[in-house]
Structures are given as structure tokens and as C-alpha cells.
Length: 242
Length: 248
Image (cartoon, rainbow over all chains, first blue to last red; front, top):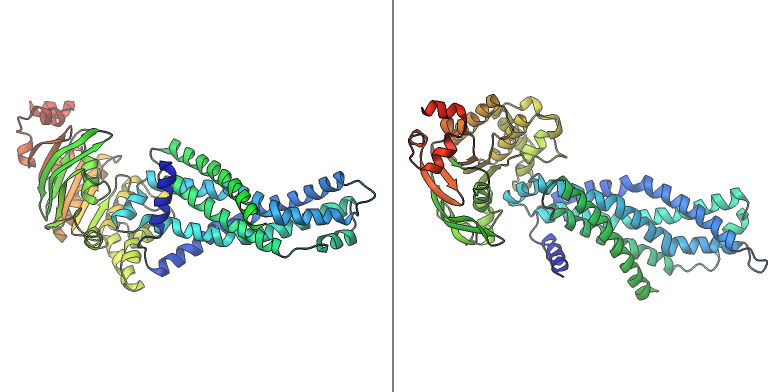
């Protein structure tokens, strides 16, 4: 409980007296590149293959003369939009971005770089962490939209190239019974997950004590705790919004 | 002038500082010496506001740091320059950006003014040629000098150095010591150095404070220190063979 309390106090310090707006803008842009742009490649690879695999496996499980083949595309689309793109992408990002944030801040802590900021009279938590949290909340939804697109495209490629579904059936399927609200739901999830991943990982890194071993431990804890929080938040969001 | 008054600090019930009081004069290099684990770094952290003491006061020209409002604390902090043990340079920034960082964050100077000041400070520590290099590309001694340049870039009134010679060869140590002393005298800064380097004690230590197990056991000039009759200080001073021979 004390750790949770400390986490909320930490969140409070992010909103404490900060620095000049121009400084935050520059930091935010740097973090958007570091968190968002540098994750495009891994997101693209993971999403395309997940989409491809989900298409093949759905087709494998839907061998029935009474179910139209286009249903495969419909299922791929809904799986991608509702769960695979937002949740799996964010779990992948928890591993990549979360460990990066925790180890960066942990190293800064043990090498006294954070102390150096403090003695200059700079709100170190706000200066270092707030841009990371906001950058994650901005870039994660973009990455998830990109992921959903590539996931469906991966499904299309795998389905049509292996012959389990025709191009016509696939295009019909992904437009069939489309619910626009699901897109809103898909975008809310990474917004929340981005906040959780960036803030939890920053918290773990920011309060690292010791040496290299503890930085590694903070990094592992950051990924583990972020993944658990994503799964809990995923359930709560599904209950609340669907 | 900095005054510390009855500083007490304990961690997990263990008292690390047991009522330290001292005055550190302007324009002088004040050295806090003592063995490992005697509370030197904790005292320094209490003075610069990184660790809040359980008891006692730290006064900067009469302003009580811990009993001041946030604004006063911030203004005192902006009068400080701190050289950390490992330099504490920001890895993602070049040498020049590291030195310019306090100016970027805390002043409204123009880019030209900032560049001029950065260049001056880098020249002062003899590192103008390394301005564009990253901290990972420079030696330990150069990192310390960049740390000094960053510490003085805001024209501080108080300079704190945490073991400025640790990990350096004797020649580089002497250069760093001389640089700190020159800067102290030139800008009339109140300088406090944490060290256990005997060479620094003899070369630049004007006022010396000896800490032992959280207590201040001795205070005086470097010309007096070798004549001490405090057994713990004698043991500390003459711990190596060369100095023991010299004492004889």
C-alpha cells in the first residue's frame, strides 16, 4: 500500500511547479521521437504477423459450409480493433518503452544526474517524467491505429496469398457489420495504457537506489508492473465502455 | 558565508551526523575530511538540500534554508554550484550543452549571451576544444572539469565539491585542486570540498574540518593539522607509509 501511496505522491509532483513552457515543448518533441517514432518498426513487425496468424487460425477454426468465408475477415477486423492492436501492441511497448524509461531514469538516479537537477532548483520529476507520460499518451494511440491497419493488412496478405479467403470476400468481410464506436474504444485503450506504462516505469526508475543490479531490477519491475496494470485496465475499460 | 548549526541526521535509527556545527568562510576553500562512512557526503547533501536533516539549521548568508519558503530555497539553490563525485553530466547532451543547461533552464539570456558565457567557462577549465564531444568520449578528469564549468556557469556564491579527486591520477588531481582554488579566490566564492585526499588538504585546504563517526573532532588551518594531537585525526593523516616517514 505504501508503494501505491508513493506512486500517487510521485504523480502529484509531476504537476508541481515546473519550468518554462518552451522547455517542456522541446522535451515533449524529443520524447515523442524516442517513444513513438522509434517504436514504429517493432510495432509494424508484430502487428503484421499477428494479423496474418489470426487470419490463418480463424480460417482453420471456421471450416463450416453454413458460415460464409467473409466471416474470417470480420473476425480478424474485430479482434484487431478490440483487442490485438491496442492490448498486444501496448504489452510490446511496455517491454520496449517501459524498460527503456526505467533504465534511463534509474541510471540518471545512480549517477547523480537527478540530484544535479534538484540542486539547480529544477523540478526533476516534472522535467524528466511529465514529457514522457504525455508523449506516451499522444503516440501510443497513433501506434495502435497503425498497428490495427497493419494487422488487418497482414490478415489480408496471409489470407489471400494462402488461398484461405479471396480478396473479394476479405474486403466484404472487413466492411460487414462495422461498428464505428469500436474505433473510439480502440483509441481510448492506448491512451490509458500509455499513461500507465510511462508513469509506472518512470516511478520505478526514478526511485532506483544502488547500482547496476538495481537498475536492471527496476527495469524488470517496470515491465512486469506495466503489463499487469495493462491487463487490469483492459478488463476495466471493457466493462465500462462496452 | 555558510553556517551549519547542530545538524543531526539518522538513517533507520542510526545517527550518521551527531550535531555538526561550523562556519564556512567566503573566498576560502573549506575542506571536510574524514574516512569513508563518517558522514561527509551526508553533511554535504544536508547542506545542498538533497537530504533534509532531522535537526539543525543551514544558513546561507543568514538565510535559513530549511525554514524558508519555496521561493527563497529556489533563490539559494540558484546561488549554488555543485560538482558531483562522478561529474553527473547528462549523458544525452554534449559538453557544451551540459554547461549551458543551467542557463537554458534558469535564465532568459539570448543564445549569443549563453554561448559567450559557456565558452568563457569552458576556456576557464581549459576544455573549449571538447565542447562538441559527448561525456562518454572524454576522460574522468575532463568530466570533472566540465562539472566545474557547469557549476560556475551561473556565477555561484557557493561551490560544493564532492570528492573532486576521486579516481584521478595525482597530476590531474593537483590541476583540479588548483582550478577550484583559483575560482574560489577569483570570484570570492564560499567553497566546500569533501575529500579524503591528503594532497588536497596540504595544497588547497585553508580551513579544514575533520569528521569522525558523525562528530566534528577537529577544525583548523592546514598549517596546524600536522601538529594535531587528536589520535583519530593523526591516524587518518598518517595512514600511509610515506606520511609516517615524513612525520618521523
